Image (tube, rainbow, N blue to C red):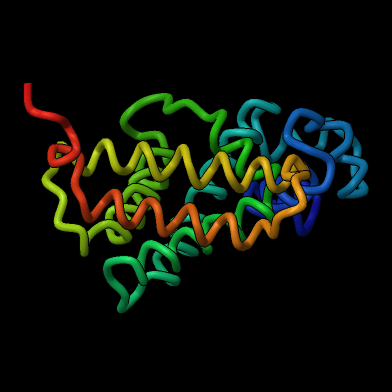
Length: 195
């Protein structure tokens, strides 16, 4: 019988909080049960497996990230939207490294997977960040991949303390976004030399 107060959502939230503390790679049903003060088998009344838990955390992470970027970019465009959205993503990754890792590791299982709309929300938020640059659809795909790589890479390296050169990390982040802004304004086709 399911324990009163536990539900798939509350178990997922507890799992997400746990991996933000200990790291996604250390997630286990035993550790989560201990955190919740229950026996491990009782978790299976709410979550099918550890893989199911990780997938649910990934959906939660993508949903939260999309909302954070959306909220930050509302009413902004161009560089202002880029900077606000990038900072929202950086903050989310720094505050939720375990959830972020779960989201990056997740694989869509089919068209009805709740991860599909969650990822769609992140892509829509990133697209809103780029809206003021008036990229065509082909350019936007490349720009979205670039943003994900740059922003996630920067924030992940920052979260694990990899920036050890004696230069302010915020200054580096600002410089990077200025560089990206200039590149998006210049447009990639204009940067390719004629043959």
